[in-house]
Image 1: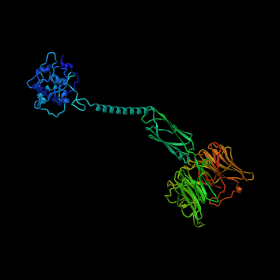
Image 2 (image 1 turned 90 degrees about the vertical axis):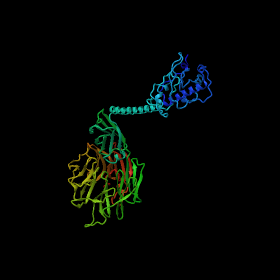
Image 3 (image 1 turned 90 degrees about the horizontal axis):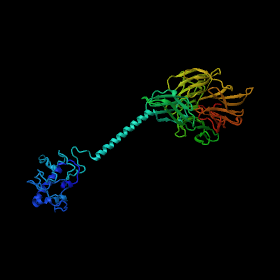
Image 4 (image 1 turned 120 degrees about the vertical axis):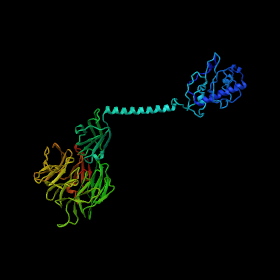
Length: 619
């Protein structure tokens, strides 16, 4: 059996020029060793002999070389002994000048003839650069070639496949890109199958219960088709306006909202501008519980402004002074008028009493009937000079100025002259002022425009102005009470209540109805009782508070949303002395808080001038 048949089969991989050069040198070295100390009989040596000749082992590159068949000789080379081949040892290489190799031409008939790969292109390789590691173009060794050994890891040849590390990187990169494509496609499919969704909500629940005009802004994940107000539902029901464009949906509540209440806004049949299914967008929020500010006067000590919840159990004094004449509150600030010997002072501060600053007055004088415009950022008051005579000084002029104190006080003029004002009110949700001068002329002036004074006829008093409707309730010279549209000047009689409790001395509007203060009289015309009647928009009347002849109702006003009422009562009027302030009031006063929806009384608190009220008590 041929020795070649006993050699293990190895995979065929192309050899580099360095490998072929090493093989040729090993072949030459084997021929030289054979000529110097080996006879031709060595070719028949026992092939199982594992002993090696005493010489240095061949390098790894030489071991890949397959020697010529035994017994094959040429003029320049002799086959190495079989014992050396078996031991894996190759004799020292020949001189480097001997580069041309010729394989053996004959072998035993029982052995397979083989030709080393180095002999196929020896003439072309003779002048090749010995440091060139690129593979030469030749036929790859076959799997049956016993002398073939795969190239070392990291070696590359022209046309050789990419290394495993490169393949792994390419596969990982492809996997990542595939995942991204699948995720993007999935999101697109979800968007198309589910329709628009809400991605952002903006709303201020604390501001919403304090003033009208608060907004809820919804942002969708895509541009939307046009939305109509008929598609929007708010629960509990409250009036609103809609402003929608692109991805945004703005809902403006035209009246303040109830406190401690969950509101749910639903928008039906919302569709993306690019098509796809329609959907209903729904979003909810809960408003905060209300707080109220009250003024408590103390003839023996300092007066104080308190903040409390509607139970009265968490009352905290936020500001104290010797003589507090009046105060008003916005959603962020308090405005307080102080009475001193040389005149009034007007302070603005945060709702907790911090960061106090004083506003400049038109002169040295006295301030009364202060009011604030939440939307316009103004404070207004009636002003009279301290030094006042029949010929000199200003009496009861209307002054408005910015709450920031950045501007000078502005005295209201009619016909180019400073007007003496009998009664006045800020129009809610605006910077406009409605007033009646001493001549009985009813006028409107808007601080935010240069339109000047608008005349609205003659009137005796202003009962109140509805929030969100721009409608005032005024009493004309003939005693009739009308609802006056301040936008266009149109008016209509105020409907009587059912049942009819008689003529009201004061009427305070709130979202959903009015609070009417009526006085019961005996047949001789002597007052024998008072009551506050709630009248809804349909005219249905319900008594809220009733007092006898010994007590007196000084004021009634509603919370911004019309959820609660604050009714100020002076008990035991005969024994309840008046103080000596600019706004003289009984020393002992109580504020009764009532739930307007149920009619139940929540609590009675010591103090007056509730922050829900637009004006001070009138007696």
